Each structure stands twice: as structure tokens, then as C-alpha cells.
Image (cartoon, rainbow, N blue to C red; front, side, top):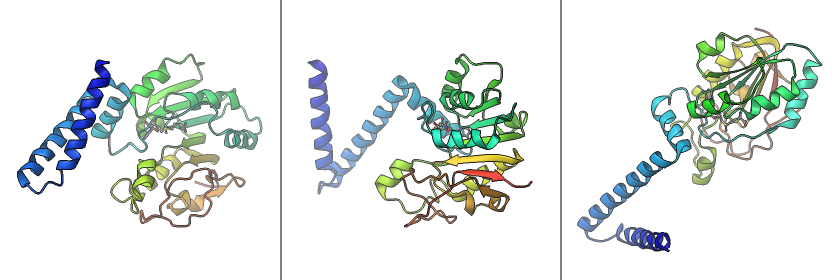
Length: 266
Ligand SMILES: C[S@@+](CC[C@H](N)C(=O)[O-])C[C@H]1O[C@@H](n2cnc3c(N)ncnc32)[C@H](O)[C@@H]1O
């Protein structure tokens, strides 16, 4: 009952703030703006205290914004069955593959890859320390390693036969769609995407696979595109959010983007 009354009071206060934001009096407008800022700060502070997911993402954005791509940790088991099956078929039973799950979140992708590649050495790299701590509690075999995602740490385990970079190379995709944003320059410039693709490229063996999905940009626009050839016609057509060109501008009528790439040469 008390909570209900509290919500009603907050609702009425918010409504009143909204109404007075366009008041004719500059003093009222100023007061209302200050209240608004205080209200939002208080809300964020409360969330930081009670919501560990929110806190870990906020810390990531504050302390590691240069390296982080997508911040949300959404993941689940066997998220891309057709793609995983195609990669398994490509390697045709080859033993002891080395696989990197770049941006493995809470580990479901690594556990899934184990099912498709029973003898592979699988490395899960994750930049969110809270998610990484969850990964490290998973009951896994000795050929699975989780590590904090820095290039020098990952390099210790390279080169890889396959790198999966799924739903990582994007930023705030739903917000961008909702707001109708037409340039990603400030939020997630093409150069950041390209730098990451080049970094991953350097870690892949020739004839290895680079698998990217749910990206706001196209691998085909990058400097290393000529080294790669698509495997089959697996695509990102199920990614229904806005995509952008190499100038970070919205692509109005996007063409189909491949998702599994074979590295042809160094
Ligand atoms: C939406 S989840 C995707 C998880 C999984 N790959 C999947 O598709 O289900 C994106 C993950 O990428 C991680 N991430 C973002 N930038 C990263 C980076 N530079 N290195 C490693 N992980 C990163 C985020 O912390 C988040 O856990």
C-alpha cells in the first residue's frame, strides 16, 4: 500500500515537472530543470547501488570506453545454430581446433561451442568483469579458458582456427533505431569497428574462419576485406536494426551481409 502511494506521489511530481518545464517564468523553468537533474542523478545513484548489472556496464563505459563495443550482456545457449553447424561442417571433424569467442558475455556461447567442437581448445574473452566472474564459476573442462579481453592476453593463445564475434561490434542499436539516428560518428564510428576487425584478423590462421553477426557495419567495407571470402550464403538478414556505411552514415536500403568468412591468406 505504502509503495503504491509512493509511486503515485512520484508520478504526480513527474507530471508537474513536465508541465512546468515550458513555463513562461524563467525562474520556474530554472527550478524545474534543477529538480529534473537532481531527480535523474538520484535515480542513477540508486540504480548504481542496487543493480549490479547496471553498475558493471556504467563502470565499463567510464573506465574502458576506448575498447568496449556493445555493452549489454544479452546471450543464451545455441543462439546461432545454423551458423555454428556450418562452421562445424567446414572443419569436417578436424581435431584440436583453437577457437576464440570474442565477447563471450556470461559464457553460454563458449558452452555451446563445446557441444559443436568437442575437442577444441576454446577461449572466451570478455571485457565486462562481472560477466567474466560468472564465466569463471562455470563447471568447464580444462580445454576451456576464460580471460579478460585485452589484445596481449588473447595473443598468448593465438593463432585461432575460428573467431566468433557475435553481437559485439555494435553500440546502442535499439536506442539508435528508436531515435532514428542517421550518423554513428559520435556513438560508434566506423574506424573503431575497422580497428577491431583488423585486430581479430591478425589472430586468425589462413583458412581459418572469422564469424561476425549483429554488426552495425560491414566487414566488406574494411581494409582487410580482400583477404576474406564468404562461406556459403549465411547472412545477417535476421539483424533488423539500422546499419551504417564506412562514413558512419545510415544505409537506407541495406543489402544482405555475409556472416561467415574464410581467411584466404595472411
Ligand atoms: C550482446 S553480448 C553478446 C554475447 C554473445 N557473443 C552472444 O552473441 O550471445 C556482447 C558482449 O560483448 C562484450 N564486449 C564488448 N566489447 C568487448 C571487447 N572489446 N572485448 C570483449 N568483449 C567485449 C560485452 O561486455 C558483452 O558481454
